[in-house]
Image 1 (spheres, rainbow, N blue to C red):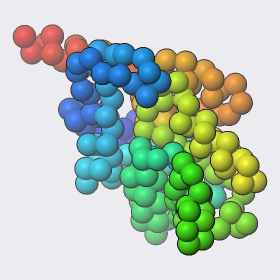
Image 2 (image 1 turned 180 degrees about the vertical axis):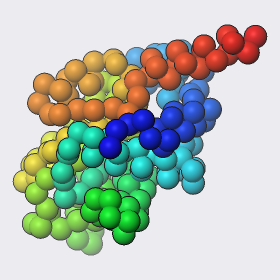
Image 3 (image 1 turned 135 degrees about the vertical axis):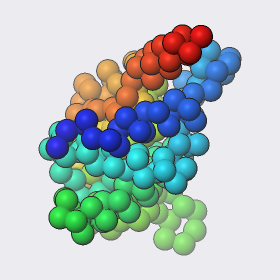
Image 4 (image 1 turned 180 degrees about the horizontal axis):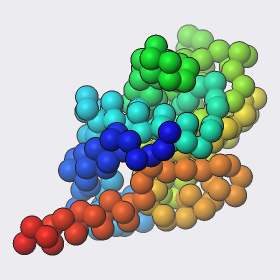
Length: 200
């Protein structure tokens, strides 16, 4: 299996249409940018969720990454991991891989009830996990999530993002973890600019 399946090109087109916002904006890192990647209009879209999940599962298969569950930081990862879990189950019924449960990571442990910080899995029965986020800029929210799962005794099989802005975060993550992105911000922006130029 490779990444030339129909899912990834279709996802790229959807991200370019729905998830690139032009204009001055402050990033979570505190830096200012002339554009912003807002993946949620894509990952919360029915087709977008479907394509994202298939593209993520294809990437895991391509890189031969095996894990017991997939999760990530709030809130960008939440629609992604829910879609991945659902599509992994459907694919398993077709003989393609096995179901991949999802989990959510809270910024702080819940103040009542079971007081969990990691929701959706029994961490005593899980060993290897994939951590995913929608956009990697400086990688700070991803690193926070990694610290939480490692403190809980889980082992990180890989770190993924839908978009790598190539702003230092991916380099930082690669120092310790296998890191992969479906797209770089540059390829999304360059292709969109090329299409705009061709239409003139």
